[in-house]
Length: 239
Ligand SMILES: *Cc1c(COP(=O)(O)O)cnc(C)c1O
Image (cartoon, helix red, strand yellow):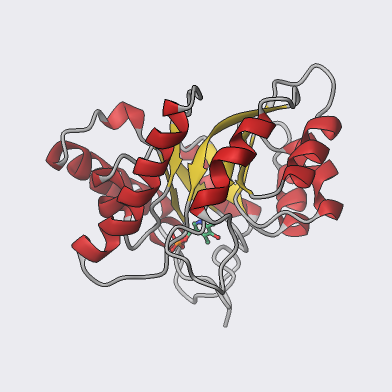
């Protein structure tokens, strides 16, 4: 039987306790790798989970939420319209989604084409702050994954500075799963080095969106500023 809160488990889920665990992992990793924990934002990835679970996380002090499926996200955003939430769109962006993303989100983490960025900029509502954007990088060259090849990132970064409705904040990666910490760190280190190269061209990128439930420690070791955590907070998703 499916539970009304989790949708896919028969046990209720203690979001507050799970958030406390995740915050503890972030703080422990920050301490171990000599990072200021205040420079690491936790983005709670609530995709496929009901608004009631977002409410539970809000009540436990969470402010930033990430979504991947636009229709599912828009329903939650509408249900929670009165609440103080920064919404992050972390999924791939097709042209037909840009208007809603520009209207309802504070961040888009997976931009990898100028055309999409230009639409987001043009469609950003007047009076709103620019949409914060990361370029998604296919950092470990997996043919099956989206994101720009590392050697194409600088050119796109340069072009995005022309667009007034967006603000390029940094780079995002979603490397394939690796078991051990050293293997997890390698692609995150490569993303950090790429960010440094882009900044050496005159950009001021301050964001590395990297690290999920299974590898947030490795990401923090390599400089993550935004960890995107779903399962560890909200439990497993139905696939
Ligand atoms: C689902 C998702 C996450 C969260 O993954 P978990 O392993 O559940 O923490 C992070 N980033 C993106 C882009 C996702 O799609």
